[in-house]
Image (cartoon, rainbow, N blue to C red; front, top):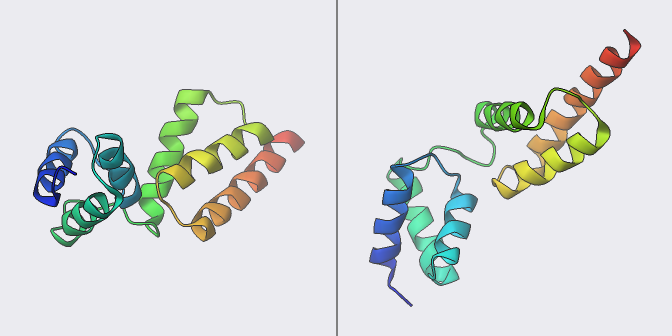
Length: 116
């Protein structure tokens, strides 16, 4: 156990490079060797301080993350792409409800594209 102060410091340093959701931060700290409790405490404190801005119900952040993912994977919309997108968004810590809502809209877009 490295201590929650250390986890908080490491978390703040990670946020200096890019944004993380609470779940991503927790997982990242655990991979760095911190305990689950230390990682959760640090992620909670970083959220309280307003440093973690991506919440599980943040629709705009989900759309931005999905857009980034789809740009990396290519423009061909296939059902397999949607399932891998769902897994990616879940790992980022977005709520299942929000992911499902987004995927339903994306599936509708796919149907419309296939009709043309």
